[in-house]
Image (cartoon, rainbow, N blue to C red; front, side, top):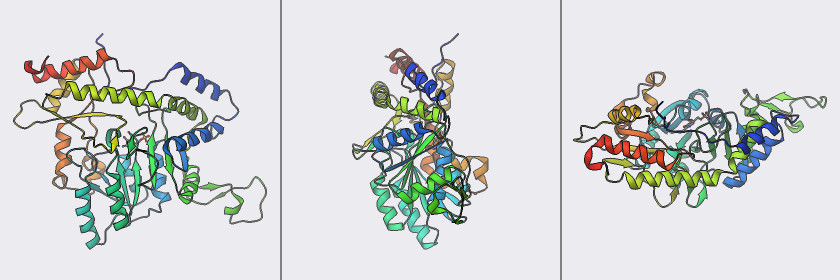
Length: 393
Ligand SMILES: Cc1ncc(COP(=O)(O)O)c(C=O)c1O
């Protein structure tokens, strides 16, 4: 059988399995002491005051919008090129979503596009309450510029850092919230570290933290000081907000803690693989995400874009060619506004020219911690073969 090279894959070793087994033998398998340890570890790693673990980045994005006071009729803007959760979290709160076109060079939200859109929105009194900034593939957005705009136009910032645990911006770890109110990480299987499903929110604001804690767990408080009914027995609790169960389990947190021990080597290997692609594919008609000196990507994804002009070779052609050779690529993403659910927003494709061009030319190449040199060399050889003889060497 032909060997398959996927675009991404988790890395679980015997120490991870041992830690999960140990956690399963303890008294608490959910909301136990390991979750707190995991949260403290992420806070230390990211230099943030508070961390809240949850059962996915999607659910944490949802309660982050609620914790920032998002209400029916408010506006949330996010990048047009992201996973659905970056937008659905706001719709779940009854808010209206609009999109920001991407930058041609780094594929993250375009600051110049955003600035123009804010000027217009101010005139129309439709300024966003929150902007959700996604660090595509692990590359942080232009956070300093975004922060300046947030001070001027008074919106909050949620960093959707689902891809970027271990990334740095201006020498500070992503998650430190120097330029944002809340940062969200995903620990879904193929992300930088995994807990199966899961995620973490970090913040430096104690009020946001308390709200996130309540919203993660049915909006229920067990804190005497918060109770409306003052006379009550010791087992008493009260529901303060409408909430759901967005909790993670203790044994997932044990997996997360064990995975964090490998974070440095995960990031080093991912950077090595990305550099290998960049070096060996540099003479091909391909573009890669521009990384400025102020940013260090975690390389959750390695995205290549075909320079399709005057070229018979297309992105879909390359995808299918590689697939036949057992190399399974992916596309990150279908622009959110193109999904049938979002079509009701009546968003015009022509408003997002850079996203449209990206959508027709981008491809995510395989990159994962356990990728062997022989595998990446096979992918590179296959890509060269697709473009023709002169690139084969
Ligand atoms: C940018 C982005 N945001 C949010 C999510 C949602 O993450 P989760 O699967 O942990 O809910 C993903 C998942 O792939 C993502 O890529």
